[in-house]
Image 1 (tube, rainbow, N blue to C red):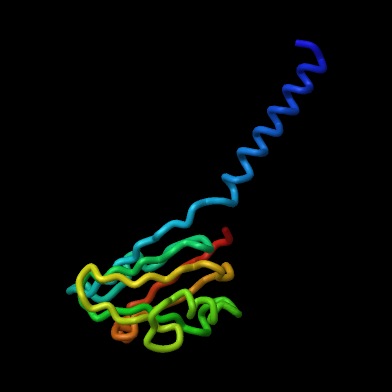
Image 2: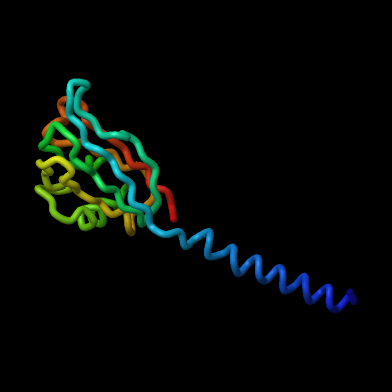
Length: 142
């Protein structure tokens, strides 16, 4: 292979690698992560109680047993400046940062993580807070 042909081929190869690798790093499709809300003889809990997600993902909380359940975020246990966006992303609420109650088995409540700052978001179930039904979402940058 001539030197100019080899140089052109290497330049093309480098361009192709960059062109295909860049979209893979930042354009990951949003994921839906399921967290089950459980109340039984073992107690009241979110399963799993701690998850890691990315900005833009959606968390789907599903009533399994022991209803009513909901998802409420402590305003002082979320990243600074996140409350307004989180409130908007929660859809139907019963109060500030407090999601609607789910009552029926398999009923769900979703929270979008779109536009949120990275950080830790601690939450609880209002009816079962005294029973330590709590959880945590670690939100990573896109």
